[in-house]
Amino acid sequence: MASSPLDVVFRGSYWTAGMASPVTGAVAVAGEVMIAVAHTPAAIDELTSSAGEVIDVGEGLLLPGFQDAHVHPVMAGVHMQECTLHALDTAEQFLDEIARYASTHPDRPWVTGAGWTFAAFPDGGPRREVLASICRDRPAALVVRDEHAVWVNTAALDLAGITSATPDPVGGRIERDRSGAPTGVLHEAAMALLEGVKPTPTPSDLDTALIAAQRTLHAHGVTGWQDALVGSFGDIADVYDTYRRAAAEGRLTARVNGALFYDPALGTGQIPGMVAKREAASGLFTTRTVKIMQDGIPENHTAAMHAPYLDVTGLPTDIVGDSLIAPDVLLEVVDELQAAGFDMHFHTMGDRALTEVLDALETASQSKLFRHQIAHLQSVRPDDIPRFAPLNVTANIQALWAAHGQQMDHLCIPLIGAERADQQFPFADLTRAGARLSAGSDWPVSDPSPINAIHVAVNRVAPGCGPDAPVFIERQRLSLAEALTAYTAGGAYVNRWDRTGSISPGMLADLTILDRDPFATPPLDLHTISPVSTYVGGSRVWTAPEH
Image (cartoon, rainbow, N blue to C red; front, side, top):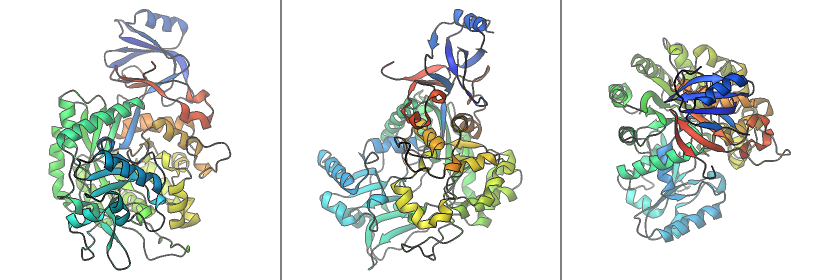
């Protein structure tokens, strides 16, 4: 029990990893640390009697703070300052909002924004002339919701000098019509063709974006995250200095591990610079991890698949997607990064990309001593599922994607067919095979709410769907405890924040209070639960307005 005055005692139900369900007790915090946990009435009374403040959880639940293991907060914060389309669904809605934004921001030299979807434009994607009809007086560039392509108008193409004679860059593609003329969509590395003409966020813009995004994540109960791409990539600004400034000036109130982007074009010669960045990071900001993009996404045929994509008639094409790093080179990269002491965070959407990453980790020496994670895992061959646990590789899941919807039903499934569609997002199979799970939102690609993602992980239907909604591969449902563990202890593990992610004496007081106990809530109502307050190192960083 505590022998010195306590700053705060939380009283009521709490849950932590390893529990099948919550227990009633009291959690005592002194400074940054939880120093005692009590369960008997006498022990609870002893703790509360010496507390400076007693917080009654009431009908809610205290749990370790959520940790988002794959997110792009600064990018999301930048989009908050632009034309935001993420809450919309149809082409008509997108076009109306772009027109409204353009008319209300006449002084901006470009119309920029993000959040449209390919599913809203089924006939080959959006066109430059459609955007030109709305933005007649200036260039426009709007990033797709998954951040892997940008839609531009004719003025933007002209300024960038992109014509039918412009070759596709390595790792990218210019969408073209039958004559070879650009239609207005630039995929993957082709987004970088706008560099030098499209305005980029200033350091001040990025500072503002980070703080706005941090506020949003704290409001969702998030106490720490891994920024899944710190470096220059396509349309993405390098935010390393943004985090360093925020940490040095005390504006960073979350724990952040930045995954430094490995640029395949620069090779292993970039690793000493990564080491220097790791050594210069301080305070709440660390950079212990390197991000490796092994493929693209299925929607534009750049996810690397073992078998070909299908055409609109269901017949195989000759397209199998792109391995962004050749398998033999990938092994060298893994060896060199491990020699430099880095954990790795791999992007794999296609089943071939996953096999290539697992092969490299299996061959590399000592890889199981690191805390590598593989994100997305949309298409997974059954033979690769049992390989995670022996390699000590964490499966980083984006649970919100594992549900029926426009993107899944009208884009993804037709491209890969029924058999491979049944092998998507195999969360439960991974867990049954002994794999550790972490979880991330990939915000701004999708909703930053851990609660909504947990809802989908447990139900395999989107938030708000009723009991008659079709379930997306029911056998892959997680239990509530498994989903919560991924979003707490799983994130703590991959970020090497070993004093976070659970509730016990000696752990840092990174905590979240929910307004209701999810274990006592019907599964289809999980998405209606809300955070009440969020604490990092014992300090309250967010409280719901009504509280």
